[in-house]
Length: 235
Image (cartoon, rainbow, N blue to C red; front, top):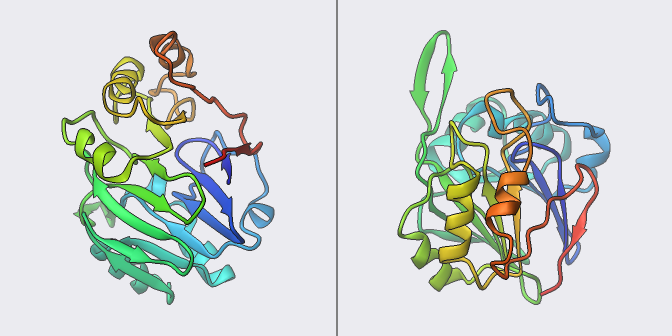
């Protein structure tokens, strides 16, 4: 599996002939340095953790231009359908869906989810983490935006992720040290931890140094990818 980071929480997973985007926030993302047309080439699915604009991002445009299926919580799916998205698969926390060669499970995240239109803030279902599983491929757990919570232990027990993608930016999610604690305490069996949701906006921490330092010597591989350069992970 090849995992490519595009800044903030946006990732592309390439595996077994599939190409999947998670939280494709490109337009307006100051940390994004890629070519959207190239990045979205061959995309079959768009997975969304929650309904904030810095995660929904370019989903509507990508879904319309590529025909990719959007997978996310029910309320957000219905909202996106109103924006013209025609290929979508709604689900909710705890559920698993078969996406023709891989599965998607929505798990808990401690965060909010909603958008603002005409100066009105309206909720769009629950915030989630996403677990992606495919035969013979590493299991990926994208935490979405979240704080640490004790039931991460259950997520680890049930899904046994090989790779955890962890928000570290502080202010809106865990900060670096708490994120490191979450990885050390609940996901020490993972092959790699990838930090995200940092260095994109001034209120967020500017780099992953504190996260890396907090996990130094803990026996956990921390991968800080260069943006738009994929990292290959074996099962």
